[in-house]
Length: 79
Image (cartoon, rainbow, N blue to C red; front, side):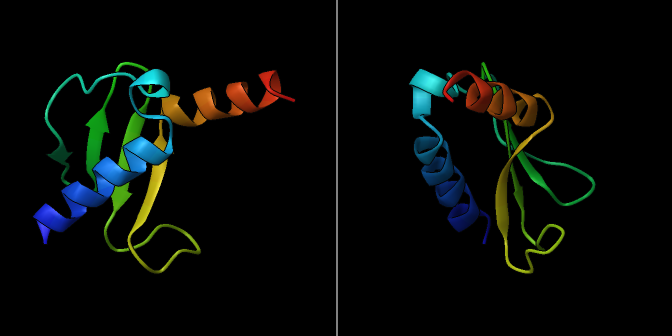
């Protein structure tokens, strides 16, 4: 349920670097009209797509919006 998804989102936040990379959450986690859970942090937007995303049929955790661009920028800087 929602509680398990929230815990998985916390694990995802940790795996993406936690406070050092993602920053602190700026607001509570929200489930938007599209059913996606979103957690806005200081530096990234974390998303959980409970019904899958693209080629991923299971619940999928990803960086959304600016978070994707941040990850791309970070990867170019660390090459």
